Image (cartoon, rainbow, N blue to C red):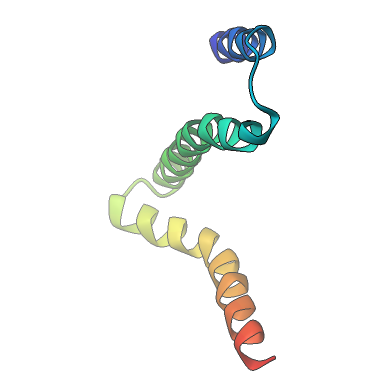
Length: 86
């Protein structure tokens, strides 16, 4: 609710102030980066918390956390390999 209110205020401010259209991409990036950082931390914290609840031990939770992320890491590295070989 608060995030939505803050975004509404920011959008109202951007519309009410005359902003150079060439600067709008930079403004959107500046707004998106903190939101994405927050979401990344929130997702990792909750993913680790769920793994800890399922396993009951911190060491096993880290292993489960790594196993959940492993397919994405594999695809990421595969894309590097494919772009390097093409």
